[in-house]
Image 1: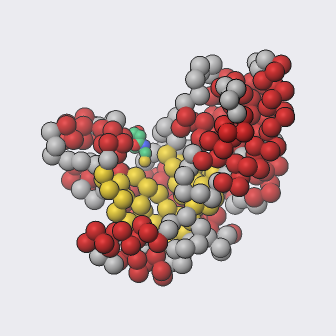
Image 2: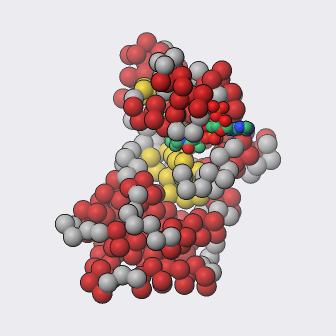
Length: 297
Ligand SMILES: CC(C)(COP(=O)(O)OP(=O)(O)OC[C@H]1O[C@@H](n2cnc3c(N)ncnc32)[C@H](O)[C@@H]1OP(=O)(O)O)[C@@H](O)C(=O)NCCC(=O)NCCS
């Protein structure tokens, strides 16, 4: 994508035109400083840190109109940021859908800016995260610290991930995949293959990255019998060179695992199952090999 369409430009202009003169002035005043500050903290493990950094710059008077205005202003500048990243075609292909989605959300008249959507929109509009598939976005830099693999081992789960992490040069930055709840249209096997292929294409152009990671309850091995339809999420990567680090359970994982499946919800309610999060790490070399062998890159 080298340019926005006239419709997309009109949608972002509309979002800016809806601001009060004071909010509009505030957006103009801070948009460049806030963009730089968000980019600086983007490689932190905390996905939401860029958005919270922007909120800090907006200060006490922060409101959702200003947030929407910033996203619109940054979206208008997105082609320049995308060009600077020199992204592969597999990633560029996702932009028309992503930009339409940003425009539609700003146009939707949603009263409050959902914090998860705000965190995602800051990253996407500043090209800190880029399209993998419709449903999966890829952060361009995310860490996997040694503490995670050491804790896995101290928990009695074996040294496998520690060895794999060292072999992968795991101290280097990784891409990280995240699920976009506003568009689950390709949360399925072909959609995930597109996402992994986009990650492989990015890794080919960025030798400094270790691979791609994703953190979720939906990689939990017991789902093989509870939700067999989701098994491919774990087995495609793991059968092709990925390794998994145990992260543990918690209310948020039970909540997410219960959200769409009556089967899992019932088992969680009765205590028969409790959701557990895992960090899936697919090192660059086996991922690129898998994508090449499948004709995806
Ligand atoms: C991740 C998520 C998108 C997966 O949803 P999904 O692809 O619909 O898969 P689920 O296993 O949850 O399926 C839910 C229900 O849809 C139906 N279903 C799903 N796929 C189906 C298929 N191919 N054929 C028929 N029915 C199907 C089933 O009834 C299933 O319920 P069941 O488990 O009781 O049988 C969804 O769980 C979700 O949005 N969760 C909350 C947010 C979240 O966790 N995000 C990720 C954060 S890490």
